[in-house]
Amino acid sequence: MNKAGAASVEFRGVTKRYGGVVAVDNVSFTIEPGKLVTLLGPSGCGKTTTLRLIAGLEMASAGQILIGGRDVTRLSAAERDVSMVFQSYALFPHMSVLENAAYGPTVSGVAKQQANEMAMAKLELVGLKDFAKRLPSELSGGQQQRVAVARALVLEPQVLLFDEPLSNLDAKLRRRVREEIRELQQSLNLTVAYVTHDQQEALAVSDQVIVMSNARVAQIGAPRELYEQPSDLFVADFIGDANILDAEIVSLEGETCSLDVFGVQLDVPHRGVKQGLVVVAIRPEFIHLTAEPPKAQACSGIVSKASYLGPHVEYMVQCLDKSLFVVDRTSREIFRVGSEVWISIYPKGVTVVSAH
Image (cartoon, rainbow, N blue to C red; front, side, top):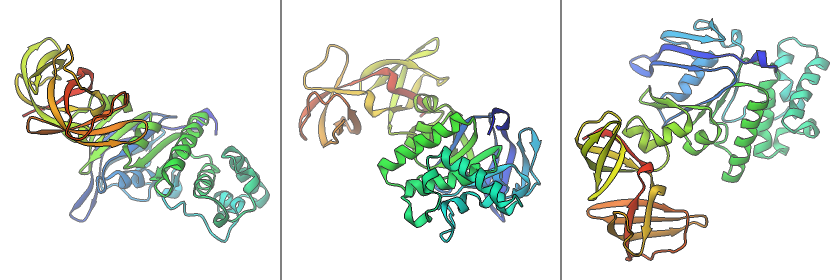
């Protein structure tokens, strides 16, 4: 695949209906050439249907789909220059790794020797050149995943699609394979649309993330933007962990406001929300616990749960009538259940998400 091969993907007001059910509702976005964009959301939000609409495995009920600037809305899957890596890998168990990888060009009428050469080149790319004669059953889950990727790459598609590609792997292998997919995508300048419901996975591999909820786009942005500046309550709660709390904007000045949380005053961006009662999202790693009252403003609480997890400690802390989830990565001191602690909140981890 050369750099000229990557293509953009554009949805313009795309809707997909199954009878009376709307699976994708007036969705618009653009995936730039050579970028990895993740479709992220809970089960049933429309992300897999969106991926299948790109592939041509489903046809849009309304709107336009363009790949590389070409209108493909009414084209079949075979007429679109895309390849898909399925959740189940969909490898043929009776075929060798090489035969699986060469399947696409073989059924397209390419001579066997040339198809095998094309397949070997891609197997080498994913580090499986020495496994060409093995059957899929003789490979680990991660290796099977790479065969599926090699097979998808053989025809050098303009767009590569991944549907929950790591869900069958254990946690450690998931991390390694997602890094391999990301490295491959960047080195080959591939345009990739990637579906997952795993927030960590999406944040780790993506140039951009399209968060979906109830068949619509909730927010599009870079991973850091989504985490630090969620557009609403759903995104704040879905991307990573967040404490969703009531607070009050006491005063406004320019782009910032003075926010009252548990009697503590914090200066944070008001994001267009007016003075009065508001809902805020507070990231657990931006809450700091101490045994003694700090010099800065703080409120007191009681530790109700403590879980030591090696690199960090997770706490539930009762403050007034609320339960706060806290992640302490310093672990200089581990507080026992029942301990009184002082709670400091760093403004960087606080986002005003809506008026009350």
